Amino acid sequence: MRVNGDIEVAAPIDLVWSIVTDPERVLNFMSGVTRWEVAGTEPTGLGARYQTLLRVGAAEVGGLIEIVEWLEPSECAWTSVTGVDQRGRWRLRERPHNRTKVELRLAYGVAGAGLIGWVAERVAAPTVSGHVRRTLRQLKRMVEHEQLRERAAARRSVG
Amino acid sequence: MAQADVADTSKRNGHIRFSEDVQEEEPRFSLLSRLVRELGAQAQRAIPRADLDERDPDFIRERLPLMWLIASIWYRGEVRGLGNIPDSGPVLLVGNHSGGNMTPDTIIFTLAFSTYFGVERHFYQLAHNLVLSMPTLGSLRKFGTVAASPKNSEKALESGAALLVYPGGDYEVHRPIWQRNRVDFGNRKGFIRLALEQNVPIVPVVSIGGQETALFLSRGERLARLLALDRMFRLKVLPISLAVPWGLNIGDMLGHLPLPAKITIETLPAIDLRAEFGPDPDVDEIYDHIQRLMQDTLDALAAERRFPVLG
Image (cartoon, rainbow over all chains, first blue to last red; front, side):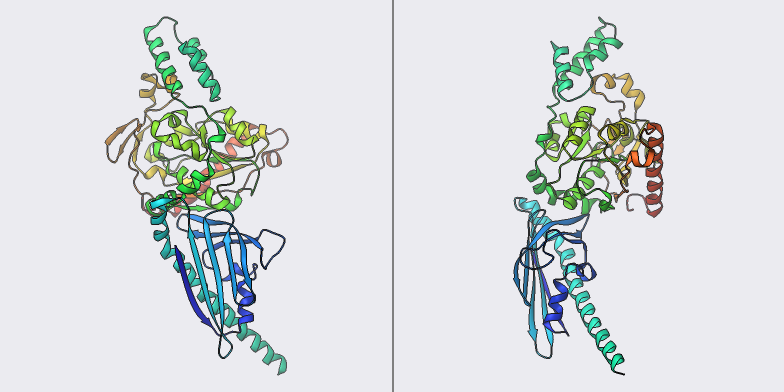
């Protein structure tokens, strides 16, 4: 099952990229995520690994994930190593006037779970979609507020 | 021959040597005694060999969606504090038990543990051997359920696994509904001796809601004694309840359709027994502490609930 969402953020692509790929900030904007810890030696980049958990219904679902695609500053994709099968992708695209289109895709399921698995994926979809939607909104708010604060700080220092 | 089989099966499953106990307590030539012994032997023979290796991570993984559907939709399950369980190494998870033979708290906790730590982490649950001998429940062994016995518990912890025990067992799980918010281990302290011997931490796991899945009326202890169930099946109770779809449900052997009660489970911080109670701790003191701690948590969870069943 795949769910995705996108949003346009009034910030340059490099700033958005630095935030979505920073493991220490993920918990600040990713809705439903209760754990995102670096599990390997590399905190970011291709091959970086994280222990993750996402609350869906009665369970916190996740496991070990690994970054399998890293094209700075536009594509970051991961796939699960253990736990429930899942893939995810941040897809960033530059827009005019220093704006960025941010897309988040999540795909999940349990191989071999059959019809019940198919049903469970669909029952979970509204919750996962809600998490994707809220994540994008929170990311937009966070990035744009951060920019405003930086501009205000710059103005104060000049004055 | 039958007695030899019983002893052999019991030994393999790590249980007490059933046949010898019966010989000590019963007159040798009583017809009733022989009948009880023979029925007991039949029951013991039906119990499959307990083997930790029967746990199958792939099987569990493929069943997670079904467990998730049951836990999320039917029971609106909520599990808190799983981060209190040490990330690795052996640990004894001690729970209060509710819900009659359907034990919804076990389903929800097994799901939560398996998704939180991954099915790769070895996790076993102790169950009454009669549960494991039910023909339809054989798959429980693939989930890591093994017959409750000191030997199996030691084997599980020595292998570095997490082990879930319900000290109250059949006594607690069939308590009447007016005692639904009471932790009652029935003075069973074997789990503390086990934790001390194996030097593993205890993590209390408190659940609420399971005892609202049917109208449990009585444990039926007298009835169980009268029918010699204790000697035949190690059953100290023959519960009486009102449950769907049977109406009056005696024994709960075929299970029942549980009411969709909201189940909340809270995992408490790990207790290192020797660090908290000294190098030579008193078992009774630990027992009182753990039961009190769990009762306080259960009281707090009960205070959160506004309505029975709905939660």
